[in-house]
Length: 630
Image (cartoon, rainbow, N blue to C red; front, side, top):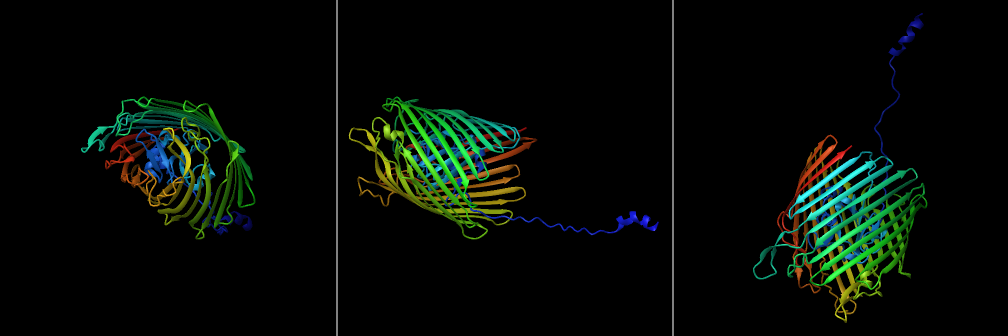
């Protein structure tokens, strides 16, 4: 009975737990990033929100190392990277070039920043990973799906000085397998700012800029789906812009005399088939552009319609544990109907690309790419990229990158077929480029992060196309130019985060040396001269401070002297441009309000990026963003 009575009492005997609980242990390995030899610089996503109702040219001119050559608000704005011209920078939309085949370049003032989810810059030979022809580099614009199941509606509106009003609406709906995103935008501005006219005589006179209005509208529809064995997307982007273009301030102009109408329709379909060792991608795109330009004084009525078809197929496979091989085929067929050509012109461009990337171990990575191009039944000398990355100190983000590239650019359709003056026998331009980069990322503490990079580069561009006066009172293009560019690029980012605040400082400096010569005049070496409109020195800095719902950001840009003549006797002076943004974010349930006040050019600096085209002084804007999540 004693034994039976004691059985229930066994629970009173102390039992020592034999499980020892320890903190988790994280085992990680630092690998080389996906871009050995060179990388890309992405624009901060917070900036995209602030510039959602502005253009990509405004975003980049005020917050990047890219020099934007602009004719003023509402006017044509083209990027110039590493001392090259506007035609040497490729603009890509989800991997597809959206440059007009007639001009061979793009107008970033017509690309709304609110339509894209990511903006990145690929400098020099690094752009060959996506396209050829970017002798200076490439700007990549991407739209991406958000696979959260939340439905969302976002409305942004901006009103500001000089009759500016802009709006953007975004609707998102779907589930874990299907997403639909619709964006619509509207932009209207008179751009009738005051400027000091110092060119009309000895006594400067304040005048108001005329014939400078713009009306722009459009939409973007995106559809995404994904399944375990496949994913795909379809995008449709339509927009139009009607502009009155101002003349240089030294010329007289009748109101409404010079106009331009741009209209674009871009459709893109992607299919991705991932696998355990190999994956496949297929893309098809159609781009239609209409550009009508009229100038009554000059008796010009130019009407142009272009269409381009893109078909791309890519296979990516693993060869061993550390090597990835990529093979791609691309066809680009363009057709132009213009009253400036003697007939409908077509051209076909086929390229085959092979690349190998190896990341053996955690210290080194290498990549080799070769691309063959068939242009109008003629094979060009292949483009080439070779890059190497090496981690200087083990288990740190302290990398040394080096690369070499050969990149070629084809003449534009206007270069070849414009009447009068076009030259169908033009050869392609090509460049040999070298660059060396030191890239560092360091987490000092749980509160402080520092990252920086320094790049030195040198490029030799051959067969530069130049339009020169011909024998019959009109200009014609020839392969007459050689250009040598070299320089230094640097960037710094410091982030300090606390419990209720965050401070972020970003800064960048570029030094660019660009000189050229004419092969018909070997004495014209310009060894000490700078090519026109290429600033030797540029600096940009941005300081942002967030505390709870309040935020403020101060950004400043310095652009050095730009010569406007080849002999460097005339120039535009350097200038400093400073912006200030102050805002407050309020959250009410699942609805968020963001109200911001912007002051542009707060010191009222008078400056020009192109001679005789003044830029506006101080301006004000109010932006309201309302975002509701269901």
